[in-house]
Amino acid sequence: MNQNEELQVIAEEVCECRKCGRLVKYREKVAHEKRRAYREWTYWGRAVPGFGDGSAKLFVLGLAPAAHGGNRTGRVFTGDRSGDFLYAALYKAGFANQPTSLHRDDGLCLENAYIAAAVRCAPPANKPLPKEILNCRDYLRRELAVLRPKVILALGKIAWDAYLQILKQDGRIASRAAFPFAHGAEATIADDLPHLFGVYHPSQQNTQTGKLTEEMYAAVFRRIRNVLKES
Image (cartoon, rainbow, N blue to C red):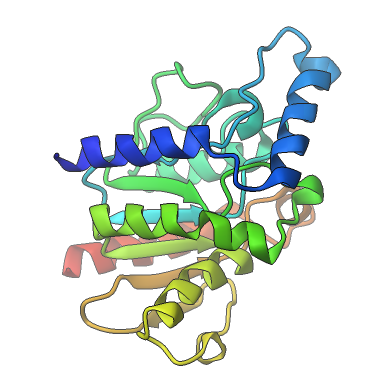
């Protein structure tokens, strides 16, 4: 199988996943009750697979689908304010063909970028449990093995730690504590591993308070472009 076919196999497994009873119950409840603004929608209501270029060298790792975003549309970071901010930044940096992500058939394509989440189902209050992150870890591990990215961009501390925990489990690092998260943090862990970047998650809590700005993302994406060029 080629990379796209391997990623499709993983995506199909993700879509059928029911490992976490709490998350399954919540995502299906949200899909049934809906939000008033989306009452005409047929919600996805399942685990949300990764999305993007099958030969991507940039792997963007988020936290989890939003209850009325990815859980509604079936595509990661699609149909919510976080996605609006993220895809606009990806477009400006040359990793997407358009700045918006509204639904699965809106024509969006990623260029040299792939996006997935540490947890594939929408969690209550956007707070997955450690066991739920662990249950999703194999999907992330397999996607990384297929893509072999040069750069990983972690959106927030949970995504940052989820990747580092894989490296710790594989014996590549002794402790996550050696790599503290911060906006703009970078880590070159080993020559054969991706260059790791961290940024604040593009949540409304961060973007509407001014904690996170468009220029803050743009600066990190410029650095990522340089790293990809050098590699």
